[in-house]
Length: 353
Ligand code: KG4
Ligand code: ZN
Image (cartoon, rainbow, N blue to C red; front, side):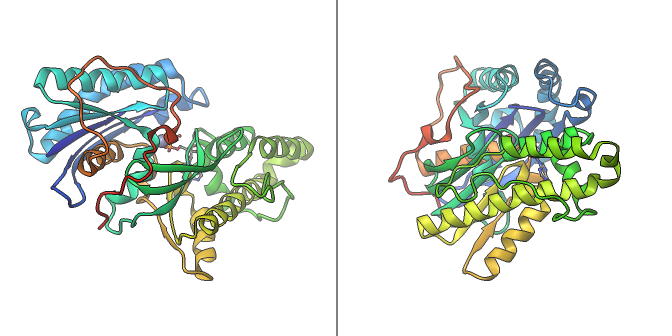
């Protein structure tokens, strides 16, 4: 079964083709991606209307490129999947509209996929897929959540941010240090030359006893520190970047370990753009060395938004029987959509490995 996946929730247009083979894990046949980062850079952040217009321009040529690379024809597609939410409404509508038009024209069913489920299942695209059940740390530009994952479609929310997301904390701190958008990668590159202990920054909710996060106060503390430094900021920027990153990473690592303890599990999946952060990976590895902990990451290029994770999530949902594709081509999108809405406890996951 060939599943085409289209991602257009934010500032990346991604298209991919996966092949599902009975009970085995689906395999990626081809994928193509266009990132709008350069286009939005001039504005210091994503401009939703520009994002939608660019998705319109890119999605069909990318689809053709994917089919060409896989040596497949449109008529061979069995299901057309797309990101239904969460994300920017106008951007989501482009992917949903194209997917449903393709499905209707080809007479094939369509499937709307949750963007975060795509991130969550993206480690299954790699050579070392995790085994269910596991704890997932979802850290992107819009979300910071800890989930207990029983299987495909079996998601229990353990904790989440009560204000800014971890990626947002990276991006906003980077912006006020004058770093280019997207701030996360830029801040973490700069942090490599800095001293993480140069400034004392808060670790919000570290000892709250629950698994929730809060990053808005940290951003304010970074702003206060930057103002205090005044003209000195330029020379101390790497130190401030390192201290900011250390604060975010420490909270993410400690809360992830607490979630594993609470669930009595030893497998952690880290997904979403912030999962590409080297300091986060290093500290989780260090934490894992003292205990029986297995940490799975998507490969770095699958950490940020892409079509492969959407096609993969669709194929895994179909293979595990939690959902069937639909021939209803009237579509809607869900700019706000809690992942726990998909939860169907008791559902066992599709095979891992
Ligand atoms: O998952 P993603 O591509 O898009 C969303 O669904 O939000 O995540 C993007 C976020 C941005 O906030 C970006 O700054 C952050 O991930 N990010 C990073 C790194 N790479 C991307 N943050 C810290 N370190 C990185 N290396
Ligand atoms: Zn994302």
